[in-house]
Image (cartoon, rainbow, N blue to C red):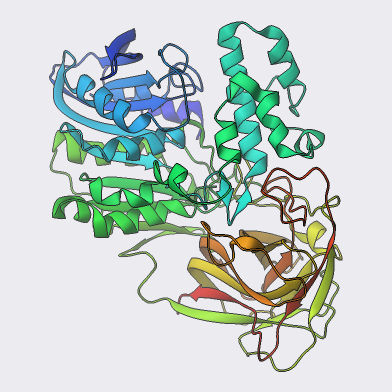
Length: 586
């Protein structure tokens, strides 16, 4: 949505800003915030956003920002730099201070001059996680939250995914965060060295060059980033689940939250797994009936970065999802806040779940997630032993396999399958045919559809496979093939072999032994139209999104060289490999 359309939504009140108001946390650390005040008679409810990215950067202080928008509609809006970032004192360490600091900040904001004493929170990504963390402390004046695109911080889906390291975005993120630290210190030489690692040195959150991301061992990054990101050592030295991760794992803290929340996520969002989990988990576990009944879920067709929190019909790779996708999330949030903080009597939508159904490109209201009418349907892998590439003989069918030969491919970590869209920052839909033309990619395509096929819900691949290595990865990508051949990626996932049974007690593989690997592709809502084809492809890399499995069985990040592996995918009576689809009857 353009700045002009945001401007047209400006409320009736002029807004002024007070800069750098200081507060002290319980341990004496001084945090600073800007306060946006509307020219409205008070007292007014407070909306609070906390950010590690600079309270006047990323358009948070622009003329048509979220802060000014909400303030122009009669809210006292507070935007604060988190501990150790920009104007706030202390040392920044990702997320560990946000629960206590968030509690202290919310209670401080509730007592500001002109405040009515009720507080709501908003923010995306890190700013969304910070909301959940603060909510676990149950600040008395917090009444509601709207987190957008937040992780639960569990080991298996934040810095790591399926046991593999989220290499591409993690290193890019830490390089850019380190730049900010070094800039505050005035170390121009170190900043220049980091800028050389980026595709676009002038872009604040630029991805890193492929050469940079290929560097081994990954643990060298601890010293390369040094004081700019000292916490990277902890992340890489804890490559299995355990107490280090549990300290902030919000899936373990749902029962401590006691306010209504609107959880906003996206089908092509890197946090796609977690947004519905928050909604479903808090519906069951939140403290108090009103909190449990006050959970709502909104899932759109966008990617992770939403400028001004204003999604458009495009902006998610190659696809334009039509005019219905261009909703105003600011308007959605304002109605939610008015209901809970101004008690204006306006009813919220009756349905607790609102999803965008891709393919049909329309919004639909539902009662629950996953949908109660879902028919989980296995689509089995078949071939004559030559499913390599889209020119092979791989197929998908609802019929279980009989005795048929396995498929094989050679995995070379030095020639990985490149990342092509998906749930990574700034990505989304990309034609998968270039990757599917490779011989190290097994491709299974269903028959041409004679009726529409809706898949809405979580998707899981059950893969029977063997390898010649003590450890390896398997990657699965589901796509919708149009009549013109374009293969639209819908969902993807990875499993690192050693984590096939446990994230906290990994075990290496016995070369040549078949194992059952469970690959979570997580959530989707999409209708494949008549004349389209359903396709699943299997390979062993998606680089640089995930780190390359070196095939040695060594701890993640420590390999200095790579070793190829020969992979076998079985699909017969004894090994019925399949993708389990959440089919919605139509």
